[in-house]
Length: 232
Image (cartoon, rainbow, N blue to C red; front, side):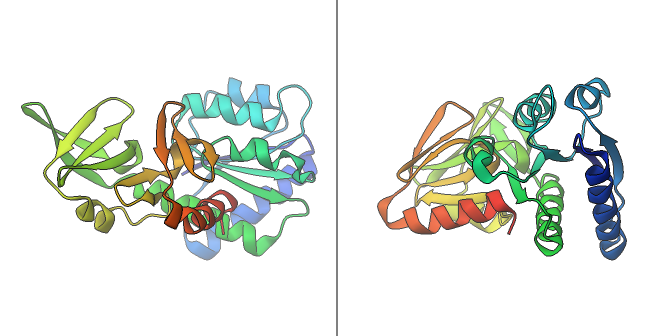
């Protein structure tokens, strides 16, 4: 699993690297860790990383901008931000799949965030066979943006295509148990990785799909979304 750290304070970047190495030993997870001190060097490396731990305030391209660029390379990357300034939280929340940690780093919370990121990445290996017209294709869970109930069947929307499944929405609730999936409405299951805008009564997925958050689920969905964003 490839992990990148980018912080213009090299000493802090190495401190984060040390914490990740300790987490790796404690959990028997093999991480390939790269450390960068500027966004430009990280992007020039050409690496397709699974997890990125980014400082928000850096000279040149900041962490928010770097996260946006990394997501274009790998839409499923798990982004974790560290900063001494929580004023950037709103910006971070607008970038899907974000973990936000304040400096100095809380070891326990950081480890929980790493554990959650690893689970999300591992969950991307779950695959389903769905019909696209007359053909059957394998679709990875990480590629599913949302699922909608339609006349006791389900519509599965991915970045590439829409599929129609005979399986009821209950089937998907049983299968998609990762913390990246949540239900803002009884007729929808959404992948929180693709949330690009959030309001109390609605969300936007992938900058194009508007999904309502039902009134009786607003509080619980908000809590679920915040746990997801903060890696708790």
